[in-house]
Image (tube, rainbow, N blue to C red; front, top):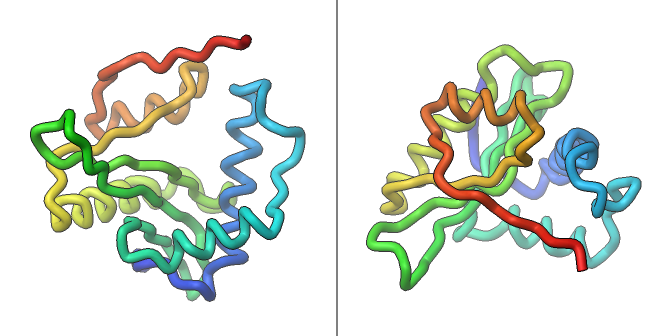
Length: 152
């Protein structure tokens, strides 16, 4: 198992993992579209994130096959005393889950965040996504705030 920075050659694997993550998350948000699709605009945005030096974007691979990803960025804010790293996505291929890959991705994300000067990692999870919440709690994340949504 190897964890490394993502590169553009990983694009198709990244899309596959984003789709798997979407399929899990759409159960928790009825405002998500029925099917994950990548149009040209989204493709360009994802490729830009892959190439960006500002992103923390890592993949886990086994035998040269990408089986997991984690991505995020450092929040530069006037409101925080210390830098905060925002964990945007984490996904392990469904065939490789429950083998410690998610833990390894979180650990490497933490290491990269520390190197960039972050003192905290922040993330969001759907309140009904009990497996994700339990995973984060095991990794010593604490419930810190509540995110509200109102349909208008």
